[in-house]
Every structure is written in C-alpha cells, then in structure tokens.
Length: 261
Image 1 (tube, rainbow, N blue to C red):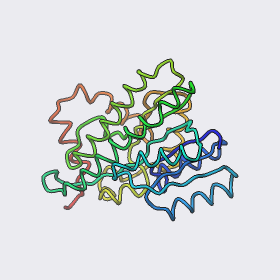
Image 2: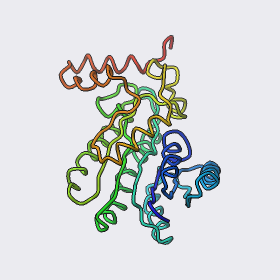
Image 3: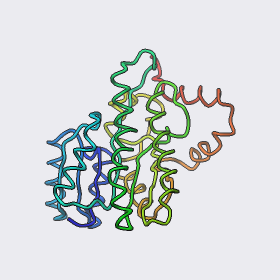
Image 4: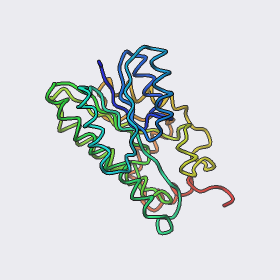
C-alpha cells in the first residue's frame, strides 16, 4: 500500500467523504469504524472507482483497547501510515446532570482519549520517516463552553488544544498537525446528537465540502481551518475571548435549544 491514510469514523459523513477524496487523489486507505457492512460497501465503491487498496478494520473506539488493536493490525500487515485522520466522534444534547454517565464517558473516550492514543501510536513512525500528516477533526464547539452539550464541547476543546501543541512540538520534523473546525455539517451527527431541529442546524454544510476544506488545509500543513462557516460567523468566533462570558454562554445555549420544547 502507498500514500496510506488511516481514517476513523469512516463509515459516514465527513469521514466517508475524506476517504473518497484521499482515494481520488491517489492514496490507499485503512478505514476504521464500528459498522463493518458500511466499511465494506465503501471499500467496494473505492476499489471499483479508483483501484486503490483498502483495508477495513471494524472497531468501536469507545473500547479503550481499540487503538492498540488497530495499530497491531496495521503493523502485522506491514502498513506504514502516512496520514492519520482522527474523525470519529459523537455528541448528545441535554443537561449534564440528567444525562447517562456511561454515554458521556464513552464520548470522552471516543472524541478525546482514542484520538490522543492513536496519535501517540502512529506519529513516532512518521517522525522516524521524516514525513507525515495528522488531521484532527474538532468543531467550532472547541472555541467555547457549550451549555446543553457540556461534555461534547469540552472534548472538542481538548482536540484543538492537543492538536495545536503537537503542531509546535513537531515543527521541523516533517510531520504536520492540522485541526479542522467544522460548523454545522449535513451528516448523521445531527440526528444522533438530537441537534437536527435546533437553529444551529437550520442550513448545514454538505459533508463533502467540509472534507475538501479540511483535506486541502492538511496538505498545506495549516494549523487550524474553519469549514462550513460564514465570514460573519468566523468574525464572531474570533471576538469570543473579548465578550462577556455569561453573554457567550447564554447565546450558545439558545442555538442548541429546540424551539417549542
């Protein structure tokens, strides 16, 4: 396999589109997700359309042992990962004190811990080879605390902070780390998170557009990149640190409330 990208959360949404894009640009793939049937369908599609090699690994990143098993399988198959795309993640809307803790613990594991673990497992090989790219999919949620999605916003803040710190640590090694900050994106995410009826998802950006923006920023070695975010919204995000915190918190809460509930 050549020019190999390992992509988590590859069975739908942004991850699926990133897989299609990488294959179209001449790269082979290691696709990771829970749903083997969807992974195999994507594998068949890519191999038929581009002839690229595809390895599928069905793993649930909520299991703390999953990253080690993924790395072990990749090593056993003699595959060098040139690009790591940590895309897997999920959210759940609701009041923190009323939510099931097991669900929030799984969210932290998938969104933050597994991402960090996979990065730790694959980056040393990139550094040893003197080249590599990491794309960590965070969210605009990384930029502020998120009432009604307290844990999700916190996990994405972790992703951005880790990504930016690693980008600096790896400066000069040939390995870059890019953090993707998508806004509302058209995918299964909104339905799973109970966000589809909120003002935030009134006009989501196609996942293919978000994937293209992130992939191209990764190839340029950019530090952070917004995707599916208007110029006005980007300006609002940039002035967040200068606004009263209570105002910001109430505003974020309003866009995550379902009208009429």
